[in-house]
Image 1 (cartoon, helix red, strand yellow):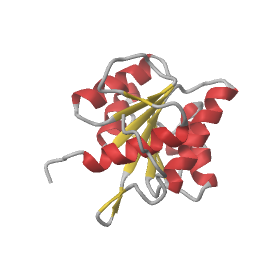
Image 2 (cartoon, one colour):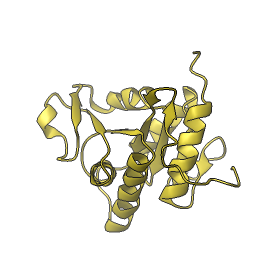
Image 3 (cartoon, helix red, strand yellow):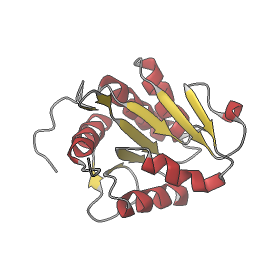
Length: 172
């Protein structure tokens, strides 16, 4: 892990494009995990990135709430066919009708992902990200070996995600 993480503000761009940082985690969570997710969302917005997630409750809603509170933009990739199922903090709801398969869309639309806590759905998203060479930063999530970068707090998680997203070569 980089020693000097610094401040992520304004860091999440690549050229003229704002990077997209995925937030993955459970659809229900306790207040402590929600607080972490909300702080991650807030840091994503402060960094100038767009937040993408599954658009429902729990970690997803808390992260979107944090991003919106900091003036950020949020995208929700929904499992069902009704865009109005998105939480109230989603700016752009994409109804897929794909169920859990929508996790692949979230990961492939992300320049990096931050995993906050989470269950088996989160684990599948982490695995997809690793398979597709999307950087993963974990905070309080599955205890996996590298290349998942462990973060100790939301600020560090977003700073590392932004740096790894900028380093990521998408063949361009």
